[in-house]
Length: 95
View 1 (cartoon, rainbow, N blue to C red):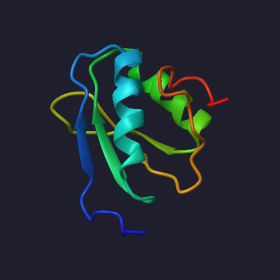
View 2: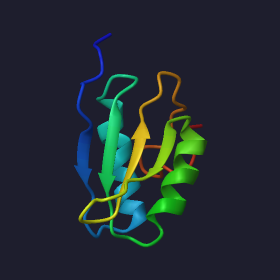
View 3: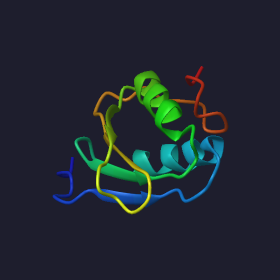
View 4: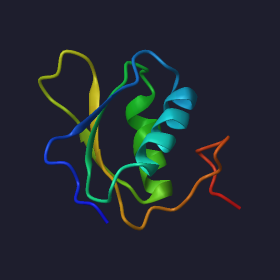
């Protein structure tokens, strides 16, 4: 298993709705090693609530909003023991 990168991986979700954001995030996190710090840029007002709930569902660590960023951004850490979700509905556990 590879070591996590020393710098955060930045994912720019822009103004995507949380549904589209979670679809992209799910795919991107699968390719990252456990322990990777991710900074997600997301302007959807529901992002902090949806991201925290999704991290709770999957087992990734939601670290909260970043301060001092030009656009709203949130931090999370990739978990080695993440629970799989449905590829088409990342807010649902994989059956």
